[in-house]
Amino acid sequence: MQTMKGDKLTFFIHLAFWAVVLLLPWFMISGNLEQPGFFEGRYYVRVAIGGVLFYISYLWLVPSYYLKGRKLEFFLYAALAIVLSVMLTDNLGHWLFPDDLLRQRMDMLRDRLAIEGFDFHGPPPAMHMMNTAFISMLITGLAMGLRLTEAYNLKEKEHRDLEKEKLSSELSMLKNQISPHFFFNTLNNIYSLTESGSRDASNAVLKLSKMMRYVLYESETGNITLEQELAFMNNYIDLMRLRLSDKVKVSVDFRPHSEQLTIPPMIFIAFIENAFKHGISYKSPSFIDISLKSTETRIEFSCTNSRSPEKGTNSVSGPGIGLENIRKRLNLLYPGRHTLKISEDNESYNVQLIINLK
Image (tube, rainbow, N blue to C red; front, side, top):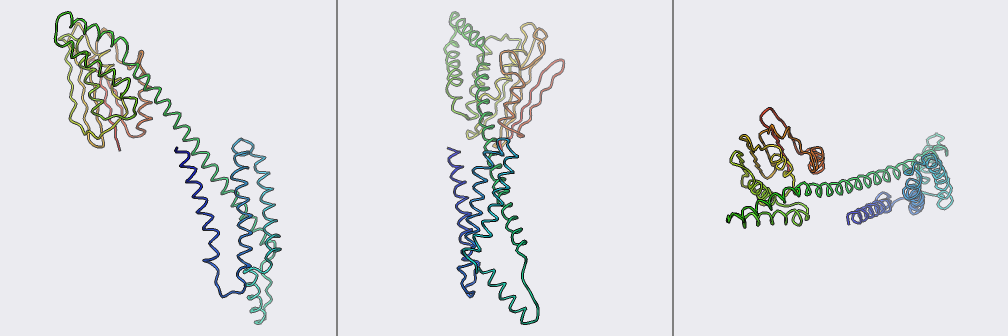
């Protein structure tokens, strides 16, 4: 669809340009000169030959030779086309319209100077040919520049399309990061709640089904609202709490947000999963602090967790997409509009992500 719109735009730009060129003489020629139609005729001969030269270069020479790396052949054929256009412009125009407006003016000027005693013959023919050759080279250069610009834009579009496909693949990988172990552990916890007769079991099943619906269906539609993403993260955190002991303190601060804010799905979940995977201890007190604040133009996310000695250092790694891939995804989604800072010390590991939406 975008290519079709681009082709239509290019067509109308060409059409508008030639409309201006063809109507130009009607605005430039004064009606008090004799036989102005002769000048118009030679002008249109020049325009026709220039147009043929332009489209030979634009449609054939540049894409068939220059863009395929056959540059020497391109310049040879371009030089030949320029020479032919100069010969045709000079000879065909003079043959069809020998008495053009410029010739009339030169004759009038020569007659006036002759009356005053000056012998004026006008510019030599060689200068006229040099001027025609210069214009022909400009036309060829313009065709080459336009075609190269279009080829560059097309290549950039293809690159962006590939990046989008890659981004989609990375999103699928990110979904897989909600690992089977999480679902197995959650189901085991729900089973334990059922065995003990806890009323929390049905609530846990509902949260798990909402998560699965989000991962499988809602996130496939492209951007989602920030509220949807927060609901997904809340369900994940609540289910992870089922297997935590009283020694783990989990603090969540998701401020009220505008329902109009939209973001790509599953931007923050990798950091949260990483905190639960590496930041909790079953032997000593530990903590996880998660917060997200937003305005109409900015999102600030923070995740801090204690460092668990028995689990080593944090890293967004393992079966998930990895820290480098998270950085890459952010670079694709928010180029130059985000800041990701990761810091750690002996006691804690901190992630801060700021996204500028506009």
